Length: 591
Image (cartoon, rainbow, N blue to C red; front, top):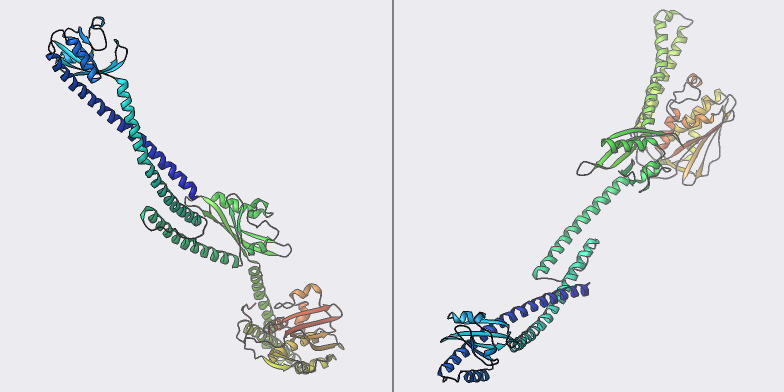
């Protein structure tokens, strides 16, 4: 780079110097030649006046001899003419053979009293002369100097001027070379620094220039470098924050250019649609979902915000709310479009559960309230005096009241857990004692149906950190269900075992079993496999939902294995030892 710049500069300078030298040589030569010619004319004029004096002093008949002597001494050609132009004498030709000279330019001026001069080829002797003529008494006198002698002297002047120009240019060229080398090195530094800036290398070596215009340019570039670095870092930070925000949100983001090529797709988008072309550079037309293609095309054409609902059932049901907005340039033209995919599957499920909750609660409350209201009205209408039925009616009212109280208690328990209103006390408890307490609590009900309760052997000294009341309630709810749905003479087994870092409890019965299609929804509120039988047995439909939430409050999980006609086994496992907060459910949803 430095060498190339150096040669460009030196060639430019040498070229300029050469043109300057040639121009100066031409001008100096021209001025010198003119000065020399003027000097020759003045010299010839002086010699002519001296010769004119000599001719005046010459005796009659000695004119031609005097002219020859003057010509010999001065080295010039001498011609004397009369006023009518006839030649009297000439130092190099026969006057008799010469034509009239009255029309010669120099004689025209001289015969009119002035000093004339001219340069031309002599027709008499066939050579070119510089002529100078002056007036004399009765005619004119002319001196002529051959031009070859003038040309030789002029050429010598030109040679001298050229040598002087060369001698003057050589040191200038050397100085120009030194300056070119210095300037090229400085310019190379600036170019290198500018190239580093263009490549984003803001920490490169700065040009070591201080003064002059190049120094000022260097300082300007350094200031620009600092501003560019600051701007670049700011843009990089903004881009990093943007990417972190886009990649961190749960919604899918898809940006498509006007050429229908994918510009950006965040990880959530790729997880939502793993089989669709979401990679950067892929074609929008390759999407199998026509709704997405039409959505982007509509935004490109109209330049306005659009939205569409999208659902799929493969492999499972999912639903999205897709909002698409244009990205415009400063002139207002649409250059791209961005679509945000909101996964509303859970919202739909929550909304459905809310509606089901309202319906179920209304139904569960209406049934006992209707019974209470009906039998109360019957008693008020006179049945209270009916000794045969009044006590039976009152027992029915009491049973439905108890059912309402149990339903209210279960709802309150669920709500307390979900809104973190219930505080749990996690302390170490022996697993075997928890099982024995739960079994003893249901002895009365199991004896009525002649159901045998068996506590299977538990590892000696096995303990678990838990809220004993919550675990006792879980076991009681599971055993209560097992008692209700196990035929007379059946059996219920309780047990627990260590599973890694967890303690896994189980309640196994020999009841009627649960069809497999009902198991996924078994722990939902108010869900019943056999609604009529469940109500007849006094169930509220909230027992298993309460079990699930109490187990979740212990960072645990619950599951069930069942076979119709053979019985069911409910498992729940919780960490044997773990630090927990008083309440663990983070979302309060009372439905």
